[in-house]
Amino acid sequence: MRPFANRRIVLGVTGGIASYKSASLARLLTKAGAEVDVVMTAAAREFVGPVTFEALTGRPVYTALIAAGHALDHIALARAAHAIVVAPATADFMARSAHGHADDLLTACLLAADAPILLAPAMNDRMWAHRQTARNVSHLRDLGYHVLEPETGDLAAGEGQGPGRMPEPETIFAHVGRLLDGDGLLRGRRLVVTAGPTREPVDPVRFLSNRSSGKMGVALAAAGWRRGADVTLIAGPLAVAPPVGVTVVPVETTADMAAAVAAHLPGADVLVMAAAPADFRPAAVAAQKIKKDAAPDAIPLVATEDVLVATRSLRPPGTIVVGFALETQAALAGGRAKLRRKALDMVVVNDATEPGAGFMSDTNRVSLLVGDAEPEELPVLDKADVADAILDRVEGLMRGR
Image 1 (tube, helix red, strand yellow):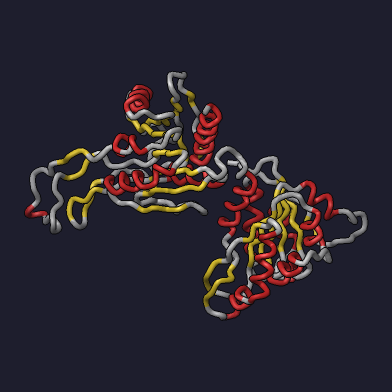
Image 2 (tube, helix red, strand yellow; image 1 turned 90 degrees about the horizontal axis):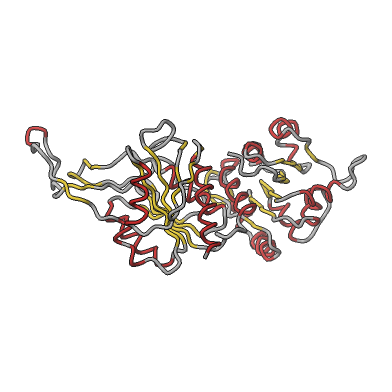
């Protein structure tokens, strides 16, 4: 997956102990397809050498405001950038930036830029809490800069714990994606995504479930947030971490999931039902653990509530609803039937028996069904790429309305 292909990003690195994490961020951005121009302050070079970033990005590192043959680097870098990211952004750097200084290459780039600017602060917790820092951060935000909140955790030099740690590279990477791709049709829209399995209790220690990992739903939530949507992820027990930026509503049973969808659907512009709720539950739940020597010959099952059908009346007019159909035979026929029976705008069909598709896999091969049109067959792709393909079609449906 190369979501940042043909994008150019200036990565500013200032002088703080967290600058070693910036190397990981440079790698993530480069791996995602971006051309990364690293600009280092003099203080940053006391912590990490430029050669590290040159090796990770395959591009020269910029360090001087005025150098032979490079007097206008700050203009060229700023004009070419699709986004500027400063990580770490120290208290001193933010103070100088807030007051319009241009006494080094990095601050000069910010003044010459039209691209969105993202700052990832890192400093001692008392420096972060100081009124002057708070005033500088507020002013930078008023200027249109995007300033992340620092994370709380262990601080340098045995200072204990507190807010001031630079956000992790993966978190900054996700915010860069939202800066680059957050101006499409999903910007400001409310997207509800369900993900993962549900668990139906048999007794206090056992349950019925399925093999769903939640990877597909998490990928959809991440892609929607990157595109600027306000995302609510209704998630059963996940095998992967939820994405940055989304509101997570944890659920356990199919009834829990139905209730959560019912609560959030009335405000939704798009519902993507990527979860795999259990289809059956025990007719009765044992109050105590069932012992082997007292186990029944059979456990009667009853059908669980169909979430899409049960919440159909709660869909606001114009809401786009996407369902998933995981089949083991006659996959397209099963998807067509679900499309009609549940009044969906689109069904994503996949065959659990195909290599590289279905539960637990990092890839998927799906067919997209919309109305009476011929199915759109996608090749085996990473689930992140499948998520983007699905949301591309969702945006197409939005244009049609």
